Image (cartoon, rainbow, N blue to C red; front, side, top):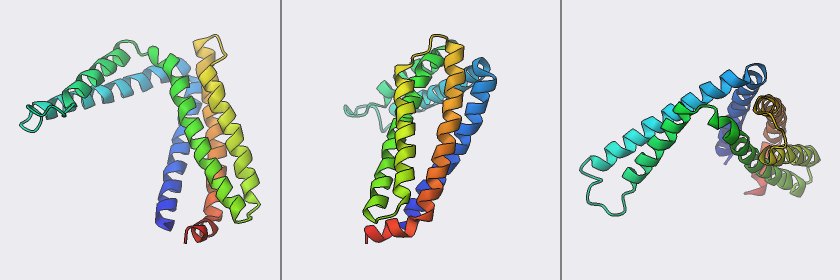
Length: 186
C-alpha cells in the first residue's frame, strides 16, 4: 500500500513540475506553445491511429467482429491530422481538457483530506482548502469566461502554475502523513 501511494505521489509530483514548465511557456509564448503542444498531440494521435490500423490488418484483427482497432485507428488518424493541420483548434479545447483534469485531481485530493480528517490529522483542513481552490479553478476553466484566445492561453498558463504549486504542497502534506493514511486501511 505504501509503495502504491508513494508511486502515485511521485507521479503527481512529476506531472506538477511538467505543468509548471508548460504554464510558464503558455504565459510567456502562448501562441507558439499551443501550436507545439498541438503538433505533439496530433503526431501522437496519428501514430497511434496508424498502429491501431496496422493491428487490425494483422492476422489477429481481421474477421473479429469485436475488434475495434480499425475504427479507433481511423478516428485517431482523423483527430491527429486535424490537430496538425489546425493547431489553433487546440486552444479552444485546451481549457476544457485541463479543467476536467484539474476537477478530477481536486476531487481525488479531497478524498485524501477526508481520510486525514478521519484520523484526526489537522492537515486535512489545508488539503481541503487546496482541493476546493483548485476545483474552483477547474470549473472556471470549463466555463471559459475570457474573450481572447491569447488571454485565455496566458490565463491558463497562470492557472496551471498556481495549480501545480498547490498540488506540490498538497503532495508533501500527503507524504508527511502517509503512515497515518496507511494505518486506516490496515
